[in-house]
Length: 425
Ligand code: CLR
Figure 1 (cartoon, rainbow, N blue to C red):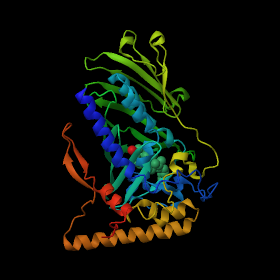
Figure 2 (figure 1 turned 90 degrees about the vertical axis):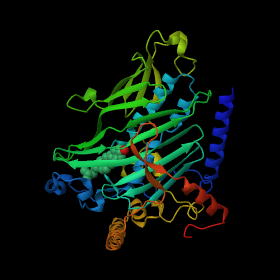
Figure 3 (figure 1 turned 180 degrees about the horizontal axis):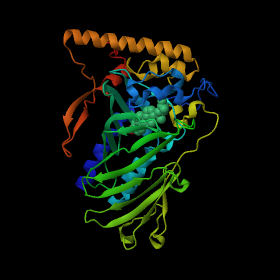
Figure 4 (figure 1 turned 30 degrees about the horizontal axis):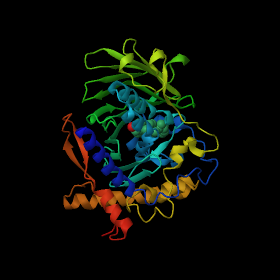
């Protein structure tokens, strides 16, 4: 009971902090872009890419018509579309059930990659982005901390969980395919509502690839093993994302199991990452369930639905999802509160979103020139770039090197919202 009280205090303190960041987001989420359809000039990918075999994406200069109106920072926030699953996970009393939802969340991060064969904008060094969802109860922050290789360090928080990590993607164009290899670890601290100890989960993202570039029918696939590990209980969820291959039946398939600390399989989990994921309790473990979560004890051999993809309505340009539509929104109330480095203020991304591709291209050029000039000045002085909001550290549990959030961003933002300081001071 004492432990439970302590947990309640942690959660409510966190809630108060997160709620302060709701300021600026009172108008709710955006439902449409200005455009109903994009008219990016249709270019042959292969015609342009064939001379670039062996290169990584950061070394390629591509016309802006290859872009979508997002950035690599936005592609990280995109993983939060199903963040309500983390709340669901925290509300389950059994740790293997929590794992089912955490693994479901990790797999849900791929649904929005379908049809997105376009290049996100490259964030400038020190560029930041904040995203707050009062309706779900979390805030998210990311900063571009290095440029070569491009790395974004992120931190999201909510009363029942904290989620953080780095997006560092190694890419290579092989001709037949374009491969994207995420290197960073993602960390999730979950505070179960039943008062149990805070848990740490970690996982790494699987490989994304684009195939069909030569034939002019490019598609995105995601494949490889994923291991979601609970460091507190020793439970692991092994997921296998099947490559599309030749058989239509293996497309989008993901299959796996939740294994307890003794190595016994407690759940099987599987489905399609573009559609639905189910879990089924291994017979014999019915007594561990508190129901109801779809799996009622009398009928626990039945699979229950863990996750279902949100619909993808037509009439949204650039093949983006309704969630992505909300990201680059800049309502008048929010504008004075975001940092001057915020992605929402980038004129090139704004122009892209509004279909002004030529202006997007000249602005993108201007910003990147400015970045090169700043780097030359730093180099002449022998200075290194230091990120404003993250520092490098060693993870206390896993021992890995990771980016430690200094939590300053939201404190300053509160003061800006209170009118006691401004971002430029
Ligand atoms: C994969 C998941 C990672 C973050 C991430 C970074 C780079 C993204 C990649 C994800 C998905 C595929 C991606 C890539 C950058 C470009 C590439 C969007 C989201 C597209 C499909 C490239 C198409 C255009 C080229 C053929 C020119 O956590």
